[in-house]
Length: 195
Image (cartoon, rainbow, N blue to C red; front, side, top):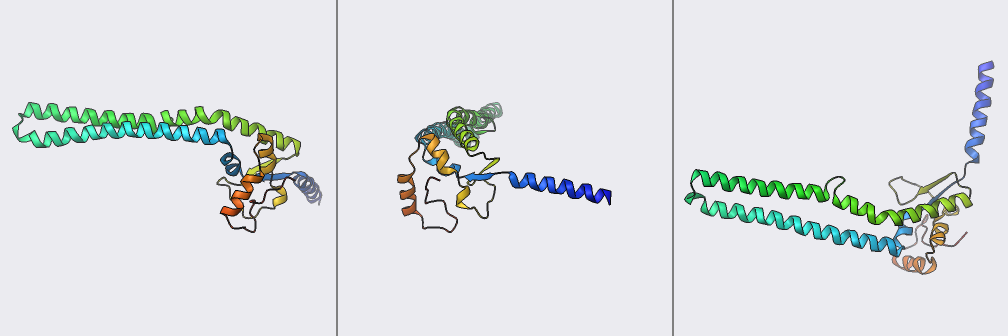
C-alpha cells in the first residue's frame, strides 16, 4: 500500500512536470533557403567541389592514358620496361585515389571547407533560435525539416517566422512565392503569419 502511494505521488509529479513543458518546431530548411549568406556559402562549396572533382578526373584520365599507351606498346617492351611502366601506372592510380580520399573522404578538404563556410551562417541561425526559444519560453524546439518525423504539426507551435524575423529575413514575399509554387497542404506552413 505504501509503495503504491509513493508511486502515485511520483507519477503525478512527473506528469505535472511533463505538462508544463512548452514545445515548438521550426522549418530550418525553409529559413536557410531564404538566407542569402547560406545560398552564397552553398554556391562556394559547389565551386570548390566541382574544381576538385575536375582535378581528380584529370588524374584518372592520365592513368587511363598511361594504361592505353602501355597496352599498345606492351608487345615491344622488355620485361623490365613492362614492370617499370606498370609500377608507374599503379603509382599514378594510387596518387589519384589518395587525392580523391583527401578531398572527398571523411574529414577531407571538402568537409573542412563546408565547415569553414557554413560555421558563421549556422552560428547566426543558432543565436536566433536560442533567442526565440528564450523569448517564447520554449523547453524544446524541433526542426521540422530534419529526419525527425513529425506526423502532425499544429501551426500554433510553428516558430519559423520568429526565427526568420530575428534573422532579418522578410517573410511575406517568400511565403507568396512558395504558395504559388506548392498547393496548400492540410498541415503545411506555407502561409506564414507572425504570431
